[in-house]
Image 1 (cartoon, one colour):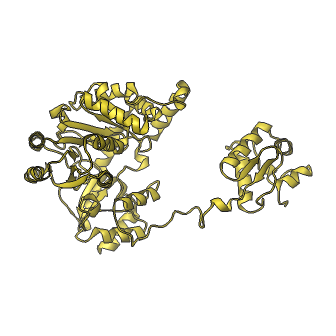
Image 2 (tube, one colour):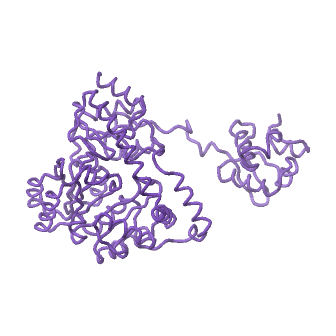
Image 3 (cartoon, one colour):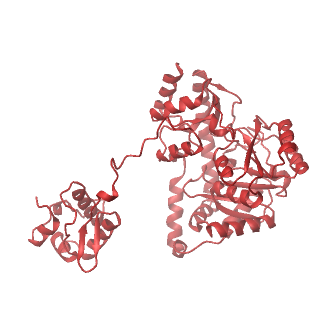
Length: 487
């Protein structure tokens, strides 16, 4: 076999893989050429610096069009296999400089490294897509409606090709904001489109609100336990993060009153519905008391309602939204679709009083200009065509089924669950031992856990851990727990 395609083509003979090109294959001719050339470069059959046949030579030798060869060479250049030298043709590129030792494998996290928020996020993104990840904060990909998203993308690209090429608008795609107005009305929150600002998920929403309403040195209250990502984010802004003990029906009101008098917070970030990590929800009496204390001590309530659509309604679990009681006077409402539709779309939103919404839109414009209108159009299309409502109904039914089964298995392992969730995807379980140690052992076994220490601003060792009932269906997860917990 010749060492270079150039040599075989220049002698007028077909290249080594010519017989492998097939017009009946399910793969385009261009992709077949790219795959074959790349394989020969990887196998060192084509050496670094070797000159490729000209476009015309290659086309003639293989019975394909020049256009196909151009497309193939361009892809190989983009993938780092070839380089184009103006006026001289295409050459095999030296790939050694681009490939670290052991390419193709993710670096293994050091199990002796400190367990903190960044550690868990790194570990989560090393497992993408997530596998054996009972500590994950998202539903398995197969639970989501990928077909609906793909159909929406195809439809939008056909009808609005200019959307792929230009900026969106700073406040967000207007038809989506109008649709969100109707969605909010269903949970008794009145918000005109000008009171809604789209964001890159709730993560950016929290960042914008905190930067607009707090200054370095200010205190921010969070539930304890709570969503861990904001702890590091707020600390990086120079804010002091203080945890308010969370009970089954909301915060400990006595503690909240004492802490508010002591710290004079600027903000209190709270999950009213399907609290992360316990899946509990705020009761009406607690909601009124929280609003009263916010008024008395003059702090803003930031209501993170990202799990809103997974809640089955008051018939299953009592839940009161602060924004529904306050109508966005002292409450800033955040939500989005990363948990229920697609994390990759990164579409979230803020609802606030009109003056604050304008300021938040300006701040968003100064930091990121706009959010992706493509993603916002996809979400709008799915919402407006009625597909979303049916999708979340199916997800809730599926969660109910796996939750009941998973709770029985957890209890058989000897773990304590208090409170027992009636809805949502999370269980806040007491393992009876330091879950940092268990998490390190899980990492070594390829099982991603979320230890309780990460869910408290103090990050002290904890016997608690968050378990995602939807992500515990792999038998290997149960085998790990049975082995480690001695059952």
